[in-house]
Length: 316
Length: 298
Image (cartoon, rainbow over all chains, first blue to last red; front, side):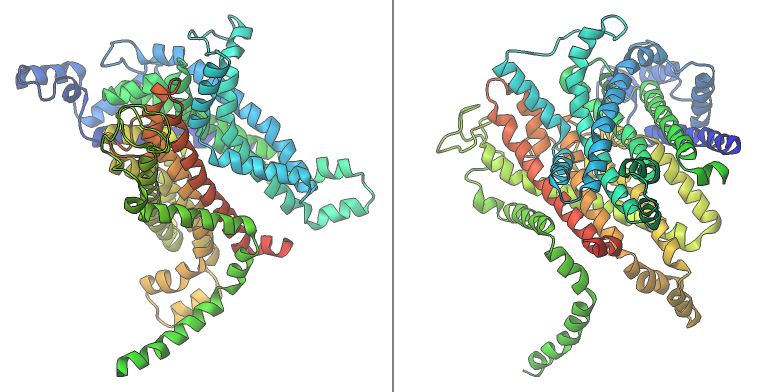
């Protein structure tokens, strides 16, 4: 098991390195930098001034130097400074990331808590009423865009109930009650699509497992239904479900960009989008890399859980 | 005269061979009412897209009335903040959604599929290198990546399609590689190789036809997420630009007037839901029909 853990851990670094390279190259390949955005097409600004600004921002250095400086800084905990505002990127990430993370964690929690039991129930009582409900909810969750539901929610709550979400965000450690008031609806809406996907996966995976011979053997041995389901079926069915949960967490971070915009939450969305508009390289590349890091770590955790759930991996 | 009488004869064997290959899955799909419903929904949306100029009562991008007019007999779904007819815009929006779906998923299928084919077929170091690249792309949350690419390329319909295509390409790369690995060492591939069939012949004549089933299912389901992604990008202002009538753009701009004029934001959302639901239903139906393991269990 410890070798397995080490192997997985060792994979994180090259993947992260690759992701950093991919993001860096992508940003430089695409046309226009911050100086173009700020002064492009302005006849009052001479080419000389533009060159000077580029130089002061380090944009005229060879790309390889820029990359090494960025990664070198990251290794020392320095994510660079916003070209636009001059604020250190790590400061902004530290301020906005908790919001995004709380949203994502609450959403995935909600998704799992509903999806796994419903998926299991629907597979066990196949073609029954609960199965029908699960399949309908699954299709609705897949087909309704969260941003539209969010818009509709705000519409209904503001016109019918004269309720608008509080404008000022409060951290959970300051006032949990108020924080929940703000976060619960966005998290539920954000969790709807992953819930549908996880539920469908649980159902499919359970159906597959329930057909296996060892389940019949377990029943034939006279084990009680609950024991067969919990020990024999669910544990084996859970592996693909875990994979999907890991992947969905990544999808949530993208989805939360949109939900944050709609509910005006001070997460990474605003920061990332304005960084993109302004070609603010340090902001965009460090934020995207940080989101990737979290995604990679979540998938690492999923990999390690495989080893816990599946003895073939533990002893393999 | 001679050629016209020869044509049916030439066509007949082809029709027979096609009929011989597909009945199992088509019959299976026909038995699946939800899959058929999905197909009908998509056919309907496609019909609306094709007949848009005939169906829509007004020009989708022209100002035809005063702004934000309530739904009524003249403007069934009301007008938007520029006095454009919302019904006409929703009708024309189907063109953009289907277009984005097919082009972006096609782009992903071609590039990702080609990479996956190369990786799976040639194996070895090529495989390792390509799959590491895919791993890296998978490590970046996909919608975040799409937002970054679309934002940096500059907001436009084409760039949104490119961004969605790039983000989905690794999905196909992984899928195709896995499928190729599964069939690569089958006896029929080996015997084809033994008879002197080249790489291209093996790939296109022998491997590709045997891995189409999972590709069809994946494509149908990705079409629905691609349409959602375009709507999301446009909603953020990173996709289709006004005055073009994209459902996502309509939602994004309608949101600001929503409390006064809710109809601006309702119709495009329902259009998205219906279209995406159609592709999801069809995708599910196709998967049940094409997956022999599931077929036996019904």
